[in-house]
Image (cartoon, rainbow, N blue to C red; front, top):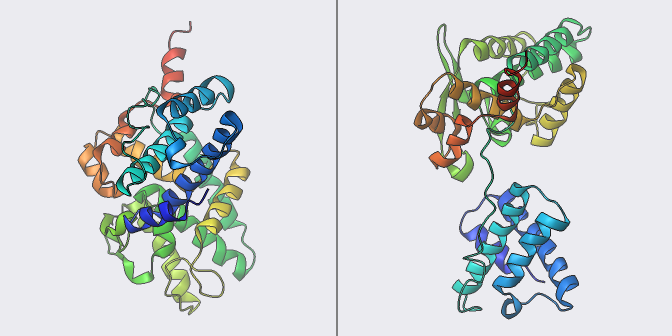
Length: 300
């Protein structure tokens, strides 16, 4: 099954590389299931609405996949079928009327105050224990990264693309400029004191050691950090603090904190760089932890 024409169609629509990759992976998975189920290769004219419905049911009853996983696969198939219609390979979209699975909306996973405090404590301890210049460089940088992520909600790719000139810190205010966010959108995010303090320490370290570093967060060679590198760093600190930490979890922590504080969805959307309020409103929903706490109130 040649998915490159469809992938190019998505790229021409300026879809994010991760979206293109995800859609193609889901379609390749569907093609394998289709061949195993029907005994023939998946072709445009062989695709029917019944196939899509049976694939949905297979995910529910046999694979026992989560609703979000099944819906993601259905959305990929819908997009592919819509392209087949647009390119003249099908007369109508057989997946258009296949319903997604309704699921209870829950806020994305975020750190509560206890876990966030544990992470901050672990980072401060690591910085205090830094015995060499190299270790001090890494610990000062890492603490600034974590505190910036949890207080700005930046995506990890946005963080890694930042340069020193993108951050402005004054005595009582500060901001970070995202020049090319998701969808090539630019935005400016104010920095609170919790972000400004470790950022000031990081800038002070660079100035003290006379290190020239155009990237805001660099390695020892002055090169931009990669998203994978940041993910690995967070995973290690999380392991030491006995919590699960990813860039997305810290982004969700920022958004959930704003929602819990009563900040309007429109303001949260602007800070996160969301183009749709539906995406932002997820953070106004209760999390799994919120529901557990609610049930525990019945005890005693």
